[in-house]
Image 1 (cartoon, protein in one colour):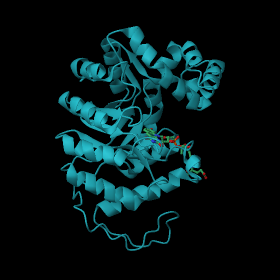
Image 2 (spheres, rainbow, N blue to C red):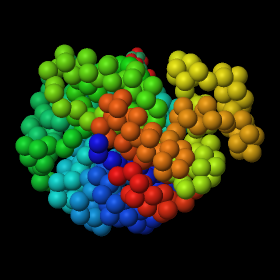
Image 3 (cartoon, rainbow, N blue to C red):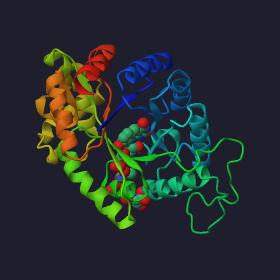
Length: 329
Ligand SMILES: C[C@H](OP(=O)(O)OC[C@@H](O)[C@@H](O)[C@@H](O)Cn1c2nc(=O)[nH]c(=O)c-2cc2ccc(O)cc21)C(=O)N[C@@H](CCC(=O)N[C@@H](CCC(=O)O)C(=O)O)C(=O)O
C-alpha cells in the first residue's frame, strides 16, 4: 500500500500547505493531492510551491475538471509542474463538482463524455503529438494543437487518476485511467467500486491500476476528540450522498434529512448532535491510531492500493500527520 495526503487550500494558506507537505514527505508519505474548488486558493500555484520545496513526494491536483479548464491548459500546466518537480507530477481529474459549476454559469452537460474526450486530448498533448481534427470529438476537436515550449514527460508520461464515484465514471477510470481517486472511506464502497474498475480494465486489456481511497480522516490519541473532529465532514458527505449510498451503509434516511436541513441552516451545533457513529463510520476513518490502522488494513484487504489521508486529518493537523507517520505508514 502506498499512502497519500490531501490538503484543501481553503482553511489553510499556501505556506501552511507547503509546510504540512514537507512534514508528510518526512514521514514517507508518497503522494500529496491538492483539491480544486473555484472559491479556494488555486491548486496550480500551490502545487508549484510544493514542487519547489520538496524532493521526493509526488504531487498533483486532486482533482481538476474539463469544464473550468481546457485540456490544453491542463496539459501545459502538468508538463510545467513535471518539469519543475523533476518528474514528480501526477494528474487527478474528474467530472467536476456538478453542484458548484452552475455558480460559474457553467451548465455541466455530459460530464462523463466531456471528461473522456478531455483525458484523450491531454494524453496526446503530453506525448508530444500534434493533435489533428478527427471530426468525431464533441467537445474538444482540436486541430493542430501541439505542446512545443515546455519539456514533455517523455515515455514515462504523467499518471492520470480519474476522480470517480458513479458507476459510469468508475468504468471510465478502469478504461482510460492509470488510477482512480474514489471519495470513500469504507470497505463497502470499494466492494462495489473495484469490480466495475476490474471489468473495465479487463475489456481494455489493462494490467496495472492504482485504486486510491480518497478518505476523510481524523486521527488523535483521544478517540472522542478524533470522532468529534470528523462529524462535520461526515455530515456534508451524508447530505451529498444519493439514496443508494445511504442504503449501502444502512443509514437512517430521516436522520440524514435532518442533518441536511441543519447544514442548510449552518446550524453546526444541531449537526453535531445529529451525526452519530453510523454516519462517522460510513463516511470517515476516525479514531485512535489503533482504530485508524485497523480501518486502513480493511481498505487494503478490500483492494485499495493507495490510501489518501483526506481532511480534516484530526483536531490538530501537525499532530495527526505525526501520528500517521508513527503508527500507520
Ligand atoms: C458525473 C457524475 O459522476 P460522479 O463520479 O458521481 O461525480 C461526482 C464527483 O466525483 C465529482 O463531482 C468530482 O468532481 C468531485 N471531486 C472533486 N470535485 C471538485 O470540484 N474539486 C475537487 O477537488 C474534487 C476532488 C475529488 C476527489 C475525489 C473524488 O472522487 C471526487 C472529487 C455522475 O453522475 N456519474 C454517473 C452517470 C452520469 C452519466 O452517465 N452522464 C452521461 C450522460 C448524462 C447526460 O446526458 O447529461 C455523461 O456525463 O456523458 C455515473 O457515473 O454513473
